[in-house]
Length: 196
Ligand SMILES: [Zn+2]
Ligand SMILES: [Zn+2]
Image 1 (cartoon, rainbow, N blue to C red):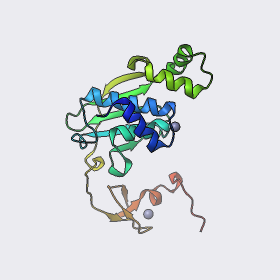
Image 2: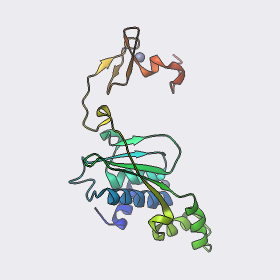
Image 3: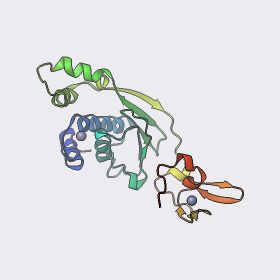
Image 4: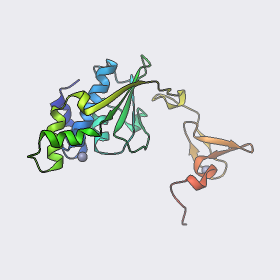
């Protein structure tokens, strides 16, 4: 794995700016890989890792850069829970570690650098220097990655009996002998409403 500074540089480029979230995300992902014994997540170990992120924020981009896990590779899973947390799953060993940024880290940053008025600058400085245990909580967890959730899964593609659109990865329900996509099966939960 590249050094912290090199990964941070890569994260800054990918994300578009340097911010406290990039530092947090790079450190979180480096720690996750370290705990799992994954040395080269984008190289020789690239098929071992699946990462679940619990927020769509600055740090999420950095986690993607460090781990190489991307939505398009099905190795990045998004659970929209609004928490600055991620779980790193080693598919080879079955081990998984969930890491969450501590609520107290903001206050600690203020305590460390009261003279820096800009919050982002203050946190960037402090988050570089804080110990892992001041910055994060860690827990070993069990994550069952279903066979149809695996990065390399190639499932059968079916069509919805109502809208006729194709459906991948078994994202359908059977109802009254019909195959229904999720928007047809659960229109009240659909994120869009048709206006034409
Ligand atoms: Zn940012
Ligand atoms: Zn449909």
